[in-house]
Length: 202
Image: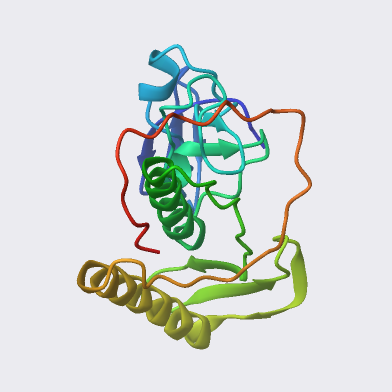
């Protein structure tokens, strides 16, 4: 097993590494990872290991209270949640709530997101749905095969429906709550001075 090498090419019967080494492969499973865009790191603001902006629990940058991170680009309290659609949506809503609260001159809510598990597709006809506790630790229960694929397909359709509903009715997004998190040493920046008054929509 090679964990630190880069793959240059995947062939039908082999994998070619960046150093030119070729290894035969009867079956190659090609999966993707996640990384945040480079804009946060390029800005000079502090980021985590994957380039996500370090924030407090309201998703406000610890370096500049005028900057709020949304979705998977945030690393709240240095303890970021797993990159996934079930986290990105609520964190996007959280960022919107924080911005609206700053404008209104009120205290923004703190992060409250729980996870319910993860899905992995294995083609169009098979998948694994692993259930988890709200803290993202796996439970001893999963579904797989065609049932897992049906569950994954339902998850994708529900995601699209939530986006459409949110467009029609802003503030309608609901998600699993996880309770207050045990946070690290990252401290919050001072709140911004409101420049105008608005009513939060959520």
